Amino acid sequence: MLILYHGWRSSASRRVRLCLAEKGLDYESRLVDMIRGEQHSPEYLAMNPNGVVPALILEDGRVLYESSVIAEYLEETYPTPSIRPADPYERATMRNFVRWVDEKCLAKLIVFNWSQSMQPVASQWSEDELAKRMARIPTPERREAWLRVARKPYTEEEKAEAMRGLLLLLERMDGMLEASGSGWLVGKAYSIADIGAAPFVMRISELNAPALAEHPLVTDWWARVQARPSFTTARIEAYIESAAKDTAKK
Amino acid sequence: MLILYHGWRSSASRRVRLCLAEKGLDYESRLVDMIRGEQHSPEYLAMNPNGVVPALILEDGRVLYESSVIAEYLEETYPTPSIRPADPYERATMRNFVRWVDEKCLAKLIVFNWSQSMQPVASQWSEDELAKRMARIPTPERREAWLRVARKPYTEEEKAEAMRGLLLLLERMDGMLEASGSGWLVGKAYSIADIGAAPFVMRISELNAPALAEHPLVTDWWARVQARPSFTTARIEAYIESAAKDTAKK
Image (cartoon, rainbow over all chains, first blue to last red; front, side, top):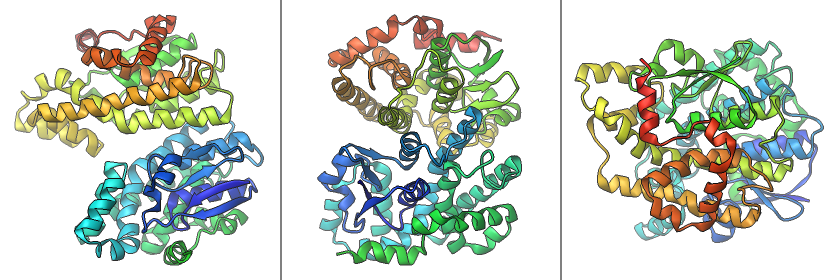
């Protein structure tokens, strides 16, 4: 069986669970306690050198990481039902969109997610504890994010700026939905593009419902995404409840 | 015919030219004068909203950007000869590697490339000229890079740090070449992974030949890459000559 190292609240984990659910693939769930720093342990870094969730262990023991790369792997290995357009140009559009979400939206979302779920614990760490943690984090971006929640909480101004950045997603999705005319972001069917956006729109719906309501095309899309059986199977649930489940396992 | 907006010295442009050459695809070459800021013109931004080269115009007028996305599009549209492994796991390895190069190596290489080719001109800009330029650059990363070469040249310490980061590519390639055993980075054949690395190794060979020589597997790989007819067709030439060609067109 596939083994998924993940977090219930993690956007990248949610994407992979959505792919698995669409494909009807079962997996063994192994929660990674991100507050305890399990994702920075030598054992986990051997699976995913970036020190982030998720990591997917295949039946033969080989490991995959990066949600967009896992998504295409699952599509190519379990092609039915398909979650990728057949047309090369639509595939390119899908890949560019997911890349854009990763590059532009993820850092903005972290400002909110981590303030809520990491800061209460990280702000209590001693200098020693903080130094030990920082030494184990493999990327400068994540060192910075942990330092922020531990010692320099994001300001209201920074949060407002992050929200402006995050909401660009809705603008972009509006344009794509208008262009496709199908109710899905790229081409005629639900695809990795929709899966890539869903965890972000979920969080926008919690953090800023009025902004989402201003985008009727995206609002309709969001209802369609939530109505898919895969959404329930993948357990894309309220952030606060997901976070509680992520830390309650021990 | 395909139309390529590009620069001879641009790493991403070089990747796309390598793909086109492997596929035996002809194209109309349109040079983008990056020092004049043509990549930030409204006309260019309509093609590539990131304001960077390259952009590929298809025969029907549709546009593609992002070298790794263009590479997969070309593979899917012109599948012979193939530049992508058939095995899904090898494809995932290829995609993760190219993504890693984009995320980790590109910003390091810019330190050297821009100090050499952008700084002499940008440092002469008046405050007015600089402000006008900055206002047209669509991404904060590129605004920062232009500001650095215009007003705060990278220090020797920063360059040493950037070189250390860039050389991690050689370590990673060593491991991949040892794992594949084929002389190519992923699987048994030349692929988008090799194309993704080639422009970076080209620059390392110019900037730090002794470091390259310390990696015999990569050195042999580099000889193999250069021996391919596509390398000549794609005109991956000395940086300083490429930069001169990029600006001599007018």
